[in-house]
Image (cartoon, rainbow, N blue to C red; front, side, top):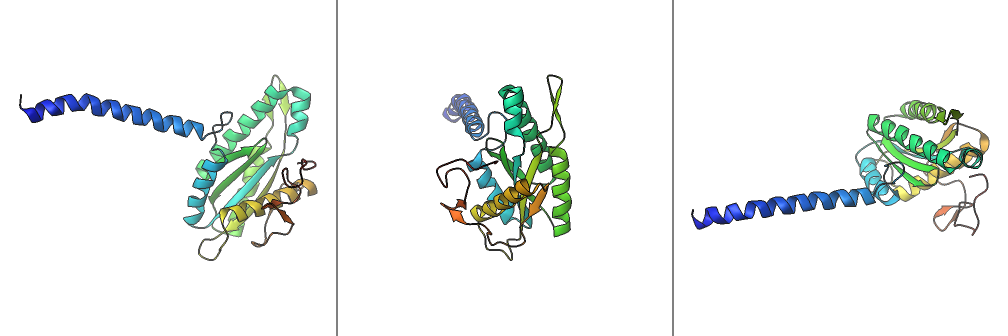
Length: 217
């Protein structure tokens, strides 16, 4: 056997080993960037992907918060709450796949998503369909648990808009908060200008802005 063939024969197993090692490493990294309960992206990983989706054409960003999650936790226990969160994550992931988007869990019972929309009419239809999917009751130990959801959204066109992802999330969060406290299923921002005061880059009243939790969030 020539030296070249010998070197190739010796190198093949080594290359295969490195490829397998790299694959495992990538999988571990991806797993670390996903929420363990829902399998959705964590905040940092979501923001990276959301920025790419928004840069690719017309879309919208959504912030979703469950309405009666604390009540479910207090009444039925944290295991039931986990089932509700996991089911919400699955429904969001299915919705995002259909709408060419991405979705992440921001923490607790709050989620964010980005998806393609072509017009205001398209956005309203998408929000209605999303809300309908999220408010379907979840059956846990024979109990039908309905958490409900409030959704805030803002449409964005990279050709005409100049807002960054942080601003868009801030605007969608503002609309979610308004929907939650008005009893609306969802609300959308009319422009890219925040309507509420900002503290530390976040909507005033959110946890961490005043050193105390936000009421009824």
